[in-house]
Image (cartoon, rainbow, N blue to C red; front, side, top):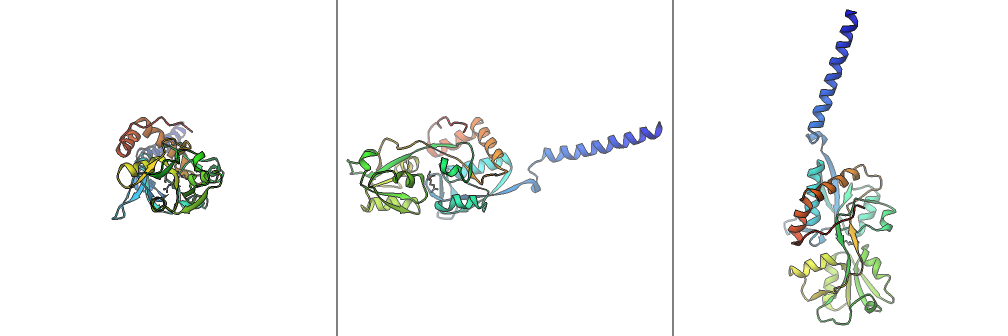
Amino acid sequence: MKLINYKWRQLILSLSCLLLIIGCTNLYPTSNQDIKLLKVATDPTFIPFEIQTASGKLEGFDIDLMNALAKVVGFAIQFESLPFDGMISTLEAKRVDAAISGITITAERLKTIAFSRPYFKAGLAIAVRENNHNIKNFNTLQGKKIAVQIGSTGADFAKTIPNAKISTFNSGPEFFQDLLNGNVDAVVSDAFATLYAIKNGKLKGIKVVADLLTQEYYGIATPKDSPHLKKINKAIASMLSNGTYKQIYQKWFNAEPPQLPES
Ligand code: ARG
């Protein structure tokens, strides 16, 4: 009897030690060894979502959001600058863990990569020179010279405009220069980014046609079977409900954020 008692006591003791150890590690999930270093691609030519200052520092709505998200989840972030056009294939090849770059969630992209829940409501718009009064909508774009960013939803959209002559560019600022030079009649690109640049004096002599061509949502992109996507989605949900999202939105857009769908 005494012997059994002794064995039981030993078992209980070792079990409690084990529980104590598990408990302690869970209390401090962000102790140094547990921090996961997440490689995140971005194309910092997309004001005000991702931009690089003269000193090389990354700034913008997406950068703030990703850094805040990292704090919630306990990730350390290492940003990697990549041209927008190479982003999807880099994710497919799993050379990065995620990408944040004003990337629109599309059915086509969902075939090869995964996206978080939507974190930004966006849409495409037509930009023209201030003195242009005849391009007003999709129909009046027909047969016109149009500039777009390679690999963007704007580039896909431009392909659907009958008889349009399309020039493609690697980064945002370049195609606006072409519009200003008179080489093209219009740019088809993300409305928010263009409006922001105009409002902040970064783009002069250009206006955005009022009606949006599309409604789109940006998502954080990951490889298809990413082990981090669940945590990323949870963190977005908590930032939406605890005011962090609203704070970042107001910092960059000086406005109330719109409602976002869950998927
Ligand atoms: N939203 C557009 C797309 O997904 C363009 C995004 C461009 N982003 C950038 N960082 N250059 O195709």
